Amino acid sequence: MSISDARKVRLLMELRGGGVTDARTLAAIERTPREEFVSGPFVGQAYDNAALPIGCNQTISQPLVVGLMTQELALDDRAKVLEIGTGSGYQTAILSRLCRRVYSIERHRPLLREAEARFRALHLHNVTTRLGDGSRGWPEQAPFDRIIVTAAAHDIPPVLLEQLKVGGIMVLPVGDTEQDLLRVRRTDSGYDIHSFLAVRFVPLVEGVPEE
Ligand code: SAH
Image 1 (cartoon, rainbow, N blue to C red):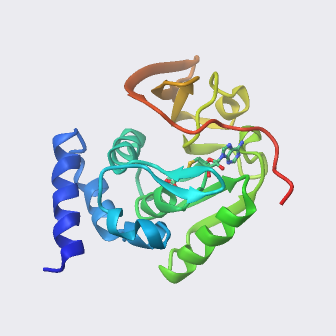
Image 2 (image 1 turned 180 degrees about the vertical axis):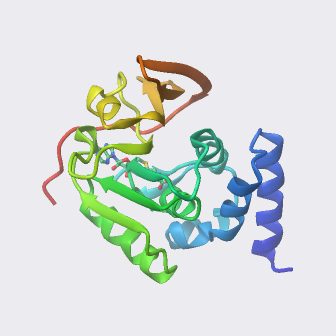
């Protein structure tokens, strides 16, 4: 077993201990090489249970948080998923193995370009990306079975609630410096909201930067 395999096994045990018990989620994490999603100086830390810098002042999310958010989405291979905040593309790659198609939006062009190159290299052909402000959702493709937001908003963006199918699930961090991870399920008559973890994410920012 290589050093990186041994580190991966250790990380998977840590995720199980932290509550990621769903076998499909764990298998998707196991099959996704996190070292391909971090830049040179951080490759040695790719299997640490930590968020790491990816450029543009952003971070690749902590593996435990990726695992717990993925698990809460309860994906199946028919699901059409919207992701806000492509970042490195790591969470996107995991989702892509568990659903029919992922539509992922990122506001930083350099991050999006790098993530797209990774999807091609890993032959992840069911990912569609867009440069833009994800707080507006993706109206042309709505409604979605699942929505995941990987940047923190002050409140649940109403547009995203509208773009969720009845019976659908959205997972997102809400709050300012510290956030609660919320699982929102759309019902026939409204939305059931349940908070499942305290987290720290980078903020959801409106608009697209000039680059
Ligand atoms: N899931 C990513 C997390 C990256 S951090 C990963 O694991 O790599 C969150 C990302 O959300 C950042 O790349 C940030 O640029 C992006 N983001 C923030 N606000 C956004 C918005 N309004 N629309 C689209 N992307 C946004």
